[in-house]
Image (cartoon, rainbow, N blue to C red; front, side, top):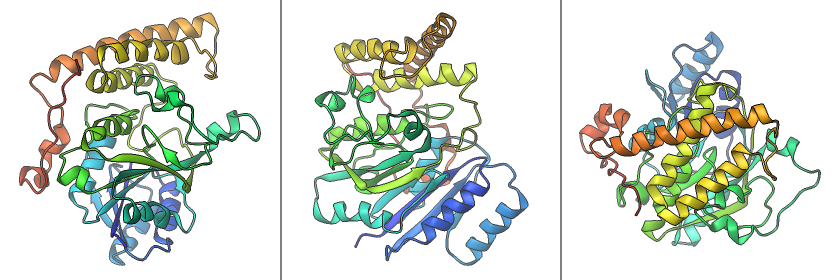
Length: 338
């Protein structure tokens, strides 16, 4: 069975981090390592003592950083991992005992699978959905890079199937994607880094590998609003602008012009106007506020695109001695699709 590297980036989490690590270490899978990339400036004494105890027991490998970036932390962790399979977890999840085994079996049996997307029992999304909602087969639109993001549901889907992307709190990849194909997480995704995993999965299509969804590789996502490698409130203006910046940056990099136009329209309809199935308020003041954030986010993404001409944006990887020593190659400079 393949050795698994479990990478847990963390920022500003205390009790939920301790509980997450405890459940990871209780996994029944026979061969795995746990790498914690800690970006919290100062922990509560109980958490600090717990982490030090796990290090002394050689239960985890702990890396303390003085910056906070979710994609940067993922890259940092991969460069220090040794597993054939890389599993990424958030620092606020609950796992069943067979979680790692559910991910690993696909890499053993199906060489064309390069990534596994697990089911995410998200507390907030479950609370908002209709009672008893289940999805057997995702609609064809869910595989469309232009609009799939608004039709993909990894919370209520109950049958295994190919998917467009995984969710960052529960996803795994073959190590070959990083070492042999030179794919890395783009550190220009800001704030909560929404869509950084989707960007990675879109770029992964060029390798010929597929992404497989397995509902048995499930976890419970607690969805804490603060922490988790970012410290921006979801209700703040900065968060909203960054939300749209990240969406447009993903689209600029990987979509054709026609796909980009369809994407922009769908993003406006669902996230700005609040059309179903979105549950956003449709009050005029709220919509006008989202129009402003949408516009500013788009303009910032254009600025990021222009800057990409001379700057690959991998500021944290450039600071990493492992990357500088060429232990693994640096990410290639992304370009906008024509």
